[in-house]
Length: 466
Image (tube, rainbow, N blue to C red; front, side, top):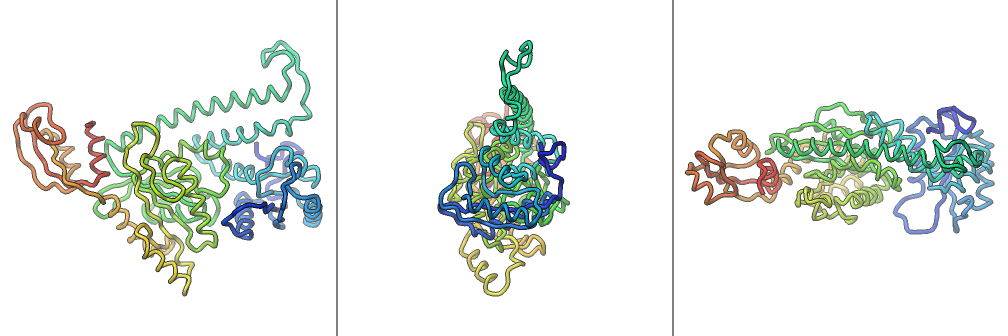
């Protein structure tokens, strides 16, 4: 399904010369035009495209057939000829009609922003789950373009009806094949979701808090992940260096163990097909106890990037678009009622100097949920560890708990994750009369334990108590 396979005349060779163009349409925007073009070129470079020229065009009124005005189409035609381009990347969503019309006008292959992102995701997917998610998104995207792709096959097909009723057109048959394949992939991904849920349930019984790294692509999540875990996850100055989720165990001050999860980077105008397809992967974010939002604070569009990430988190039902936690982390009753804690890691402060750096540090001091740092140099990473630990143990309360005297595992867990203030031996009746649980027989211990709200919720889940 890639445009780079060279299986037909409709495809181009990898590394072919290309142009990147963008239509600036009316409407509110937080983004700088040049920064947006630079990002689009970065997306192209991420899969080895040779970008020869880039340019933006102000479009007062979108043309249904071409997006750009006729004069602008001619200007781009001239650039295609001047740079001997074989591919034009339009950093906007294109309708099938617009894509077809522009290909005829320019005489080269045209892909839009969504198609380009799908190409990148197709290359980056390293697991079976990731490949299924990308294929599902690509099929969803391609389904609406069959009218353009298969016009040469718009013919009636007879036969015995094994592949479709008499008179079914080739387009209808291909659409049906796509629908069938999408249904099969969804079933396989549902199984992945169930398996992931079982793994999550086992972690809750363990139980260790889950900390999820999120952020705009290329913000430095994987570098920070490696710094905090000692792992060797692919971390490059490249958009979408990480696609498949990675999880590692870490130790934090006051927390013996925690799980740190690195997730796929977000992007402005992230195709809805991808958000839907990668929902299973992003479930780790939806069920996290704490979210660390890694921001490239040195980037000119850092505020716009933050807004894009918060928008995706809002679509997942994790945070509001304004950055406030939702009251629940999902729609089902099985989800914890505790909203995830939230910290912003203002990364890449090593790239800031002088007054720009001081201004960022002053702004961070005014926020209780911000830690400035450099994942590359390690500056501020210990501050982040302490902030995470403080947030995870925040809101602690003293609870009276009763345990069977023989439940050494539960007692050890309470010592590990809380502060055991007192332990008293009591008979079975005393265990039933007081405390927030009890033994089923034999000697019972009554404990006074200080636990964070998150730790208490995990203890209840671990013990299967209500």
